[in-house]
Image (tube, rainbow, N blue to C red):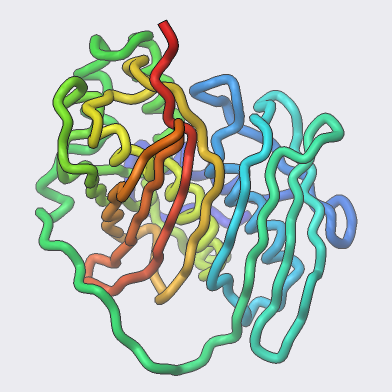
Amino acid sequence: MNTVGSGGGAGRAPLHALLALLDLERVDRDIFRGESRSAVVPRVFGGQVAAQALVAASRTVPEDRLAHSLHAYFLRPGDPEAPIVYTVDRIRDGRSFTTRRVVAVQHGQPIFHLSASFQTHEEGLEHQEPMPDVPDPETLTPAAELLPRHAHLFADPGVADRLAEARAPVDLRYVDDPPYLTAGRPREPRSRIWFRTNGKLDGDLDRPMLHLCLATYISDMSLLEPVLLAHGRGGWTVGDVVGASLDHAMWFHRPFRVDEWLLYDQESPTSQAGRGLGRGRIFTADGRLAITVVQEGVVRVPRG
């Protein structure tokens, strides 16, 4: 694998590790194996499984066809100590679109499945919603600097270091305070975050499909936070909710680079029955709508 280019300072080594995580071993024509990184909680991070599954699917598709959508379900918690086997079904190869289904298995049981559709490039009608007016990311404090300052707010202060380590490949910058800073005060269910990888992708790594896979990884980090904001909850780190992702869907609209600033505009229209819904729009810095994301997850108040 080629090296990661300059930029991002201390995050480049963690970005190397993340890229290695996404570089799956090919076991057979349509079977791949992936490892996991150390988890903040005792289960595999959902964004990792989704990104690895998309990598597996993409390796069975011609390079001139990029993913335009994915739909996934998280079935069981993944074991971070065990490898994950991804089996790809070649559902359809059409003239313009290609469809793949991927099942991720651990210990003989499916833990995740994904359907993804790929398309050859074509021109067409265009319109989009406008990008929100937000501060420049360079004026905002990196989330990695916020965590150690506020470790005393967490149920386990050591979580701050583990979370910072897990997110080290990515530079995240909150436009508004993260949930753990406003626990106890309900707010508008909206969160806006600038992000980019801590390091440039160049050489052999500068492939459009890899940018899509990295964006898939990052998209699962914060999409349910607006649910917490609506109810003044600080999150699992504070200990006032428990939760997990149930399903995840993404639509890739326009080209983007994940090593350049992207704005993740997230909101929650509803929560009920122990579930919350998050919707996100990801814009490039020049205002192009690049990705739409929707996720539902379990969000429960711990029982006394």
